[in-house]
Each structure stands twice: as C-alpha cells, then as structure tokens.
Image 1 (cartoon, rainbow, N blue to C red):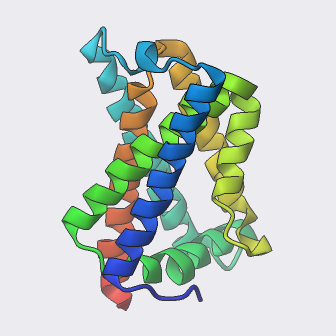
Image 2 (cartoon, rainbow, N blue to C red):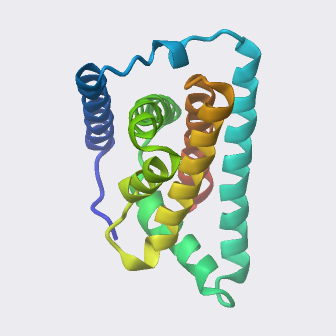
Length: 196
C-alpha cells in the first residue's frame, strides 16, 4: 500500500511536481529556442471540443477497465491487476481530496504535463519517445502495475497525435484535464467513498 498523504501534503506534492515540470519546460524552451506561442494560440475555439470529446473517451475507457476489473478479476490477471491498482494504490492516495482539489490537480497536471511532454519533448524527440517517457513518468515502482505505464504511454501517443493533427496544445491539454478530473472523481467518490 502506498504511503497515505494528508490532503495538504498530496496537493503540495502534486503542485510542486507539476510546477517543476513547467519550469524545466520553460528553461528547455529558452535553451533550445522552442517557441510554444504558435501551439498555445487558439485560432479556432471549436477544436477545443475535440479535446473535451477525447478526454471523455479516455475517462470512459478507464471506467470500462475498472468495471471489467471488478467482473473478471478472477479470470484474467490483467483485469485483476488493474482493479488492484485502483483499489490499493490510487484510492488511498486520493481518499481525502474534495471536488476543488480534484479540479486543481486536473488543471495543474493537464497543463504542465502537456507543455512538457507534448510541447517540449515531442517537439525535440518526436511522438514515440515523448510517449514512452510519459509512460515512464507514471511508473509506480511495482512490476505488477506495468500495464499502467503502458496505458499512460498509449494515452500519451493519443494526446501527441492530437497536437500533430490540430497544431494546438490546447486540444491535448483539455483532453488531459477532462480525463484526470473524471478519473480522480471516480476514484475518490465511487471507489474511495466505499473504502475510506
């Protein structure tokens, strides 16, 4: 079981981690002369709806995996591993957050991670490398949770593809925020409420 953080400790840890990512991205942009302003401009606000749609699909996929995990955990090790990860790792971590905390976490992680992984890493090393590093960023330290790293890498590839298609960081940023907001809300109130 992961260490249980107080609400304040968790928020501080996440905000500091995301702020550091944004700081590294800013310094990297300055050193490598990467101009993110073109991809941070919103020329067509309608494309933001694509981000909302993709975020909803990503969260729905996570919800489906969770439901399948509950139903088939005894037949398929993958589903057992997914359900165990949610129940034993994520639910305790988010057990004390409130709706405003969840929104803050989703906004910080969605914006800062997309600027770093898609805006900088993908710009410098391409979609595949940025997606792999994004997956590794989600390592839990347990081999049995390797699927989570793979899921994060695939999600990173999807988010990176959105940047390539729409030439706007706001599309993957919105998708990432929506996914994290809905997923953490589910973990906190649907799973965490029952257990904590």
